[in-house]
Length: 100
Image 1 (tube, rainbow, N blue to C red):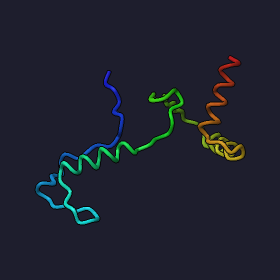
Image 2: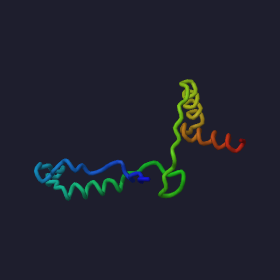
Image 3: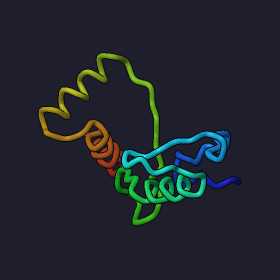
Image 4: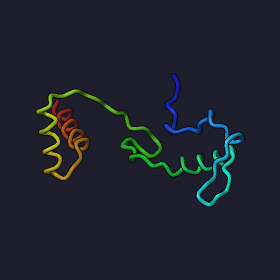
């Protein structure tokens, strides 16, 4: 099974900076090598949501379709509680599975 890429961003190999002159805001030319360095540094700063599973682990995602009225009620209750819809769904699922 193929592993999921760590980042959804990548350096665009089709853009050849050796043929096209591109300058940064200070007027310095951006070369292919410099663009790769900038991209790598930027990717290090990309921060997503924290894992619910553990440090450096992917939290599985569950998707379900619901009727519009249920979605409206969920969003309304989440706002009332000052929670996200996701946290309210996790809470409800945990309670349901404990009682099952």
